[in-house]
Length: 151
Image (cartoon, rainbow, N blue to C red; front, top):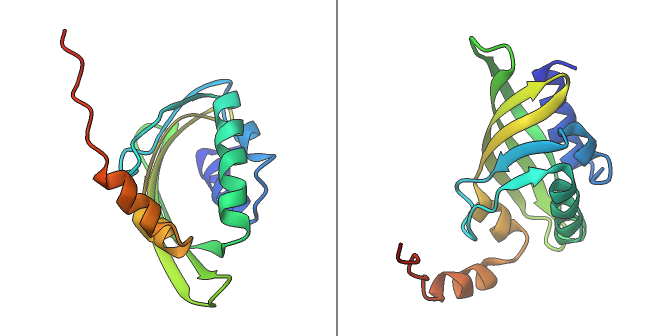
């Protein structure tokens, strides 16, 4: 699969809640990061870590929101392994019927049909708001920041 095909399979798989098949889109050793995540970027470096990530997120999403990727624009780069994809997840809050939109930009490196590196820039706050998690986020943001260890 081309990088664009892998990307499209990924975002449609997330929207379709096909969380069990998503880890197979990634190489055994990969590097997936969410640099803008308000709970902190926790690098996902293996397919097993992604399996756990998708498994944890499935219940958070399944009962609260429905969405699909829209306005997909894929930019090909000089490196045939790398694409930059702009899109939005457009959806509805299940409990209220309220619509929401989550802007996203993914930078993916796909080698031999598998994602070996990804930087996922997502408006996580918009998704947290849609899922009803704002109070938890506020509590997290109130927690004291740990000082870096002295070297």
